[in-house]
Image 1 (spheres, rainbow over the protein chains, first blue to last red):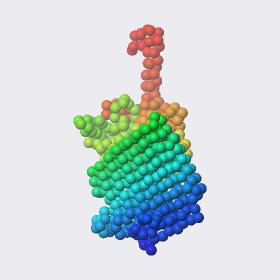
Image 2: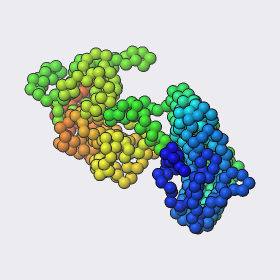
Image 3: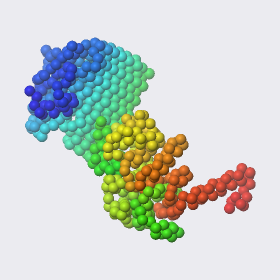
Length: 305
Length: 266
């Protein structure tokens, strides 16, 4: 059922070399093709719209669920996934989408993911986007992610798009309640004529909630990137946004910060920087024996790692 | 004086590793300026040279010309007899020239272990631990740290020095390696240079104003106003420093006693 292209896409977006241990649901060209549940993690097909419900039992520790999506046809796929992470659970969720498009028609996947991270639960969510194929049709990925983190919950969000996606619009909204913790790391590379927009809004609703957003991007050729990173503090809370971009050739990057405090004990920081690779960095690596191209690659690889 | 002294030295030299012959460097930043004029140097294998002189005199420019960061408008460079004048920075690095920057860059995202791996061309954790020890850093604390803004100037300098120690070099040039290094680590640093000298058959060039570094030198090169103004022995330079120090003491005593005698003003 999964051919060589599918397997390569799965490896790119979910680091899957074989069928994963634990729970998984693999979606290909708009259809579920393979699924496994465990005693603690259930996966149920939605009845009213395309998508699944992933239910992690309270107290589940050290388990993972992989839900990759692959598109090898030019088509538009829209999916709604809901995740219930039970109280005091500690799980890894690996999503991601890979598109192989050899046609002149657009291939698009829009994923709407809604998470409920219950009291004291911990979740690491990894989402990788990847595109390939020599067709002229655009590869488009538009994820929408909404995460509700209840009291004492902890979420680590890793969002990576390094290659081959022509157009993306990411909308992410996270709401943090009392003592909830959030770390977001975003890595983005665009080249040629690609466009990427990332909108991340974090609402710090509860006392002593904390959020850290680290966004790093590289814009090459004629590509365009826009970042709207927003922190809103409604209680005694701490939030920090760090948004760094390397710009090359004729690319364009916009970083539009917003930090808003609705409480006098909210501490919010936004740092944003856009610039080219510093020539001193290139020269330093060249003095170690790297060519200019190798030096540039090493700097970009480290920056986006 | 220079040519006589150097000429005498040249007569017996058989092991020249690096030669700068009639090097002139002109840079254009808005206006054109000649920053090095007619530099002639022959640096022998397995010797330590300390380059000193006033700020802005051209020491770092000589170092950057050796590394290929500055290209001479006139003159030639030879490494072990091979003309390297037209070689790029990368080519010179691969031929065995290394340069530790006076102000090393930071690398957001690159870890210490990754930089040392790039420098050595291999990943050997034991070797990297030894390198960091040699520059006075604890490997456990530093190997996995990103070389970003969290590093102090002194920490950066040590990492920078370690990147040169990691490489198998013929010529290593250190640009004010002691700047930003605390007094406790300074001793370790001088020991490291002495060990390098003993262990490897390399030519060591250290740009420095520090007496303790000067004491390591086989020869001291004085650079001023874009020229080599003197090449002399360590003993001559140290004697000169002692003379200046005693002059200062004399002047200080005089000022303290509110007597400015003719002797002190001499």
